[in-house]
Length: 278
Image 1 (cartoon, rainbow, N blue to C red):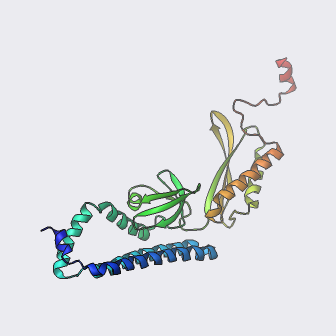
Image 2 (image 1 turned 90 degrees about the vertical axis):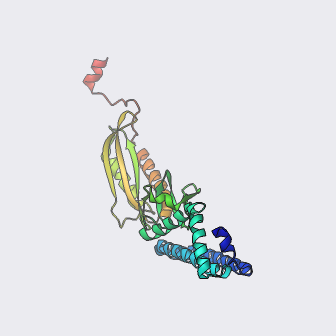
Image 3 (image 1 turned 90 degrees about the horizontal axis):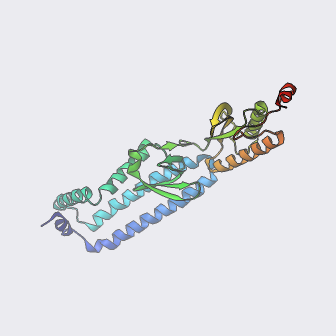
């Protein structure tokens, strides 16, 4: 007789309704905890990421507690049953549940090692967005165009993942703006600096800067102005980028600063050169 049949000998059919109630209560507590965490995070914005982390740990605890409470109700845990159950679990985990078991262990590793946490903006496998949940099986990521990406936990143990804010509300934003190599660089840089310092979403308590480089952009020379500033809250990332871009584009237009010429831009010739040209 197989181990699975041996385990069924210790099954308590009368305990199945109770076990179902335990799982339903556990699921309900997780939903209440999730909703409460979201509302509390909206009220205490400066502690939102810490609240998300606590909620994630509590969700894991509820799942494990519900499973631990349901097993004794459904099975008579005698020594003989434990031996039979051990063989069954070993075979089951080795085949049908090996990926799930690996994801659960990886999820616990993610919570302990913290390469990222709930609320972080991360880049992974071509996807970029905010981590909204770290579950028993997978991590859920919401992209900036509002797509929900589900990634198995064990994927993060073998591949590199980049966290933009690493547990903080603020995050460094980098934007590049290009102007022609014959344009007024000092004025252009001043316009970019004013755009950063006047942006309502910028977190100026941390260092900000504008870096200038001469680059070859699409086979022509250009001046690149790289604006680097922290956004006060990762939720305002795209709003900051939009606001800064609008201010800089308007400023360049008012100052007559042009973008790089694809082929060439005719510069004013001196009188002698004009005569030679004639």
